[in-house]
Length: 150
Image 1 (cartoon, helix red, strand yellow):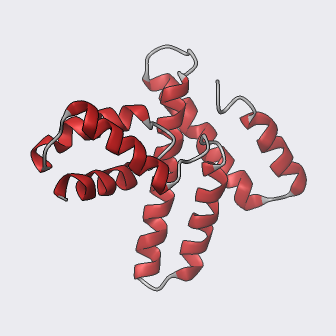
Image 2 (cartoon, one colour; image 1 turned 30 degrees about the horizontal axis):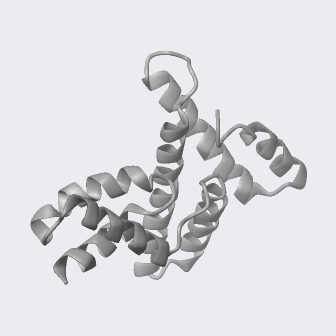
Image 3 (spheres, rainbow, N blue to C red; image 1 turned 60 degrees about the vertical axis):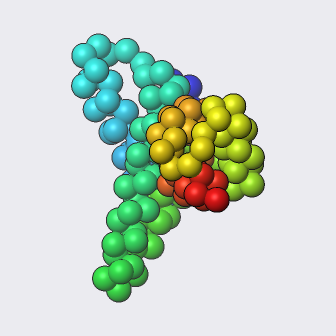
C-alpha cells in the first residue's frame, strides 16, 4: 500500500490518544480498503491510483453528508462528518491550488485545440487523469466550463 502504508500505525496512535473521531475515520478507510481488496477477487494490494480514488470517494461522502446535515440545520451531525473528512483527506497527495488547476487546464485546451463546450468531455478526460488525486473533480469541471464557455 502506497499512501495508506502507515494506516495501521495511525490507528494505533489514535487508540492510544483516545481520539474516537480520528479512530472512526481511520477505521472507515481500513474497512473500505479491505472491501475493495476482496471485491477485486484477489487478496492483493491496491495500486496507488486505486487508493487515491478510494480515499477521494470517502472524503466526498463525508463532505456531501455534512452539506446535507447543514441544509437540515443539523450542525451536531455535520461537524463530525467534516472532521472525519479532514482526517481522511490527510492521506491524499497535496492538493493543487485553483490557479494551478486553471493553468493545467489551459495547457490541455491549447494542446487539444478544444473550442467550446462540445469539447468538454475530451478536456475533462485528460484533465482528470493528469490531476488524479491532486484536485477535486468538481473543481476541475467548474474551471473547464469557465474556460470553454469564454
